Image 1 (cartoon, rainbow, N blue to C red):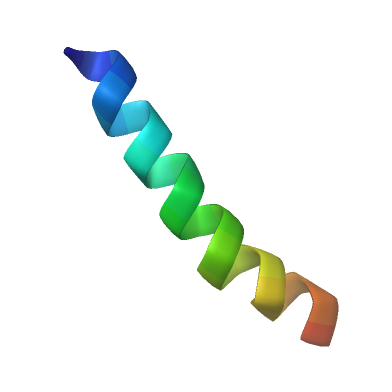
Image 2: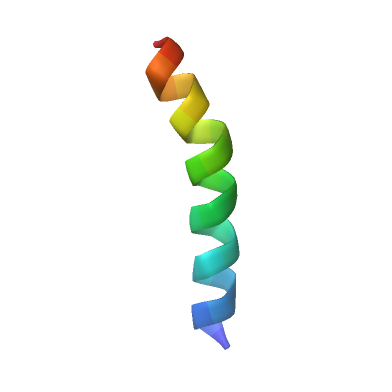
Length: 24
């Protein structure tokens, strides 16, 4: 379902985007 994809995307964005945001 789209829910699983949303969770995976949020997890990836949270790990990568989160670190990038903190650095930015």
